Image (cartoon, rainbow, N blue to C red; front, side):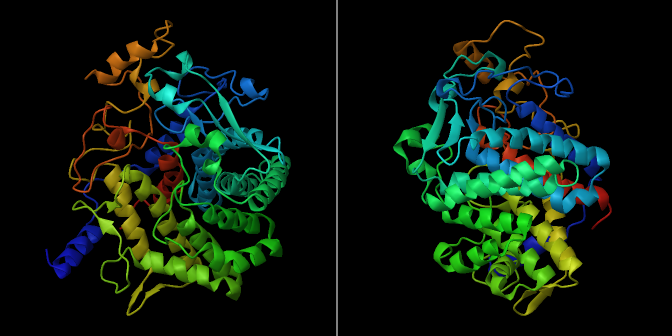
Length: 492
């Protein structure tokens, strides 16, 4: 395929009008509801995902601490604190920058979802400056079983790091989550906001004082890897934590930290990524807001990097990097769980478009200039792809529309609810269900799954985890994205 033809093809896909009208309000509600299906601990009376029950009520016992609560990150029953913290950061950012696009009901439920995470994250740093908790559950043992969380009989070992063990990535992300949440709760829960910010500051101090990757510690490496190893290193989380603390406090210390450490921490910047492991794209967009609003010249390099990233989404630009799209128009990056990449990147694109609009600016990409709506059209194409405008004509959000995957890689969804069948499903018996062609008895409403491959092909079976497994960090950035289009349903 000639490059010019490729560019024209992608442009045509980006400009293609939506073929199916979508209810973005429904998508927003369900994207938040999903988090109730991922809850660990004792469920509240207001629980709306009623097929779930209490689970993991003794977490932390082996370390004589309370680690009950939080979220299972995906279709298994482990609590990995690194991606959970990123999930919380994105729920908070969705609330901060996109709250004006939500109804009061949506705002309330999003903050409830956020608080379920931050209440737990406060527990993970409750013993600082001496100890930080990393994870609960033994992943290998858990992955050898297929059982609903209410029945777990696999070890619920809690893992911790003690000072001076390095944990800059984990602590930096938790600091970012607590700082962002302190902004989100500032009006509705001012006292809680103060607690969050105080812990964020102390957690960042640990991250900066004990530099290194948390998975380098032999005491936790085998527990966390290969599932949530910090492949990208820890420097991005230090910048990420500092950026959120700058926004939460306005303290010039964090401004100076960002200026002084950018070159040292950013030599291996991959501007074109954003997710639970790589925060550089998010750092650049987040800091760009300060430049737009306050003209912080010392931070200009961050904004330049954010613009380079945004330009990469347009095939006709002349920059050294370009994002890839599937034939059906989905943003694509090699690796598993394509919708994870798309969701996080879409959030950044939409956020940057908002910053441009509010400052009456446009995106400058060499000889090309783009209005903010050009960025929004890219995101709308991604949103509509999720909701059914794709070659498979399938909604990749469970419970949205008539056609969505009925066999997802999720233990709780695939096994009859404890409310229906009280007898426990043992580890081995669960594997019969795993291999069964029967649809899930429980609908994990709002779950956005891993999605299709580079050619838009999709294998919709629970045995294919990369295609059908949902995660909290896919849904979290989509909350803000769905909120925008809920308030702008006729955008085209």
